Every structure is written in C-alpha cells, then in structure tokens.
Length: 404
Image: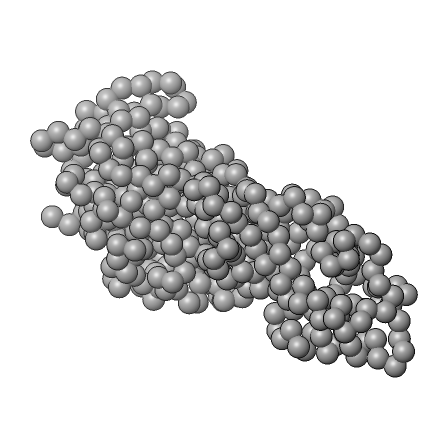
C-alpha cells in the first residue's frame, strides 16, 4: 500500500492482492494494536545482507522515522507513544489499515482483490503479467503493459494472511539471489523441564551462545511454556538461532533472572535470608520476595537438578552452595533445539540478498523491477522495527520507481 501511495504521486498505479482487501497481515501486528514505529531506530536493530550492503542506511537517510510520522499525520492518522513505540491513537491496527486504504482511494489507485500474479515477464517495452482471478478461476496474460513493477508480497511468516514467499519465486526467475528464509520473532524450543505447564513471566536478560560464542543479548519479559521460552526478549534472538541451527551449530541461552543486581548482591541477599540461625526447611522461603511463587518453584527445581543432582534442596546451604545458587540465578543455562515455525513467526529472516538489489531497491540488471519490505533479506527486533522497514522501504520503492 505504501509503495502504491508513493508511486501515485507521478504515475497511474494498479495494485493486485490475493486477499479480499489489502493489509490483512497489518491487522495482526502489535496484538492488533499496530506498533508501527519505535522511538529509537538504527541499523543496529536489524540483521541481514540488505543492512550489511548499506541499503537500509540509504532508505533511512531519505525516509527516516520523522518522514514516516509526518506522512501518517498528512494522511490524518492520530498516534501516541507507549512503551517506546508509536501506536495509532485508537490502539487499533484497523485504524492504520483503514487510513492507508482511504489514501489509496483518494489517489485513484486501481485495486484488484482476489487476484494472484502468477508470472512476471519483461519484454523490450515493459512488463507483462499473467494473472489468476481467484473468485472466477480465470487465468491468462494481462495485455496491459507496465513500465514498473514493485513486489511487496512479504515473506513466509503468518502464511494464513497470504505471505507465502511469492516474491522469491519471481526473484529466482529473474536470476536474483535469495537467502534461505527462516522463521524469526518466534519462540525457542527446549526440552529443559524448567519449561513446563507452570507458566511464568519475568523480567530477565538473555545471552545467546552459538557454538559457545556469545552471539546476542536481549532484555525484557521472558514467558515460559511447555515447549520452551518466548516473549519479546526471546523473539529478538530467534532469527539468529534459526540460522545457527540450520548451519548445524549448537545454540544455548543463559538467563539472568535478576539483571538489575550483581552476583555479589544476590549472594548477599541469600546470606541475609539465612542469617541469625534461619534454616531452609521450606526452600521456597529462601526466595520469598525475590521471585513470584510460580517462578520460585521452577527455580528450586532447576537448582536441585543442576547443583544437587536432583536430590533434596539442602535445609542449610553452606557458603559455597549459596555462591553456586547465586551464580546459577545469574547464569541459568538452557540448550535450544529449535524455533517456532512460520505459523507462529512474526517475520522472516532471509530473503532476496542485498547483493542483488540496488540502493534504490531496484533489482540489479532488471530496470523497472523493485522489491520492498519483508521479502528482502533483512529483519529487525520486535517493537515496531519491522513495520518501519515495511513502510519506509515501500514508500522508497514507489517513490524511486515512479520517477522518469
């Protein structure tokens, strides 16, 4: 939609969508509230060859956060800031989608719903499309000639919304390089009994290790379930885990359950709790006021397994045992064997490589063909970063692609 809006400034635009209406995936973002931008955006919040090649920087320079906010304001969208993110004032993703659809109508963009583009062919005088009309089943070549084609079909995350990797089919047909797509911003999978049917939420710091090498740090709310950890701090590391596991490397996370305290401070708290002859008849009492009741149960079980070979928690831990407990609380390790699939992923890691794309988002060696958004090899952290890229790169492609 953003690409069509930008291109409509100077050209007649036709928009094809396999869904009944555009922006179906947008409606799901931010748990239906659409965190469309973070208050702090930089290239350090992204990964992938499109960032490494400097293409992200070129888009950011000309279509940065301030540009995007001014653009939405010009459309009539009201917004506010919550938890370091920009949200529509209504707190409804429908407001963002509706304002974009209204802008398409106001600009005279010709919209064709339930229309699947099956093939894109470039001839000397332009592009020709083969279409499939999903409602009637009619297929055939569209005899209209298009000077420019902009592909913004997304990746493979949330395939029920229509993101099924169509862009990569077209890219490969034109000889462009595609990095294998993998799920990102999704849960991690672990067989550790710490993750069970006793759901827990806790503010933590997570360090990712790939083949024993620190490979990322994230802070935020950890959520646990029977199959493994989730939550924003986990999501931000999941794309790197997926790539590592695909390459046959081992992944492990270390969770700091009390990131605001040093190891010595944790040790001091535990010693104070046992001072004056206090015992640990009920080990829960050692962590009362430190962890929630549910988290305490999981922590005690983990400590018993890791430090005491599954035996009963000691009633009076000595100084060495308390030191090891404090250290484990600050560095609780879990092996990771997988990630959630595309059905549970918010975005895709991988896509059309930066080496195949020019700084203006056109395909190298194919004048008039542009790509934008999630179909490119770039993915960002959770919290408005990926929507910023989708909107900014879409507008950039439409703006550049419509210039004579």
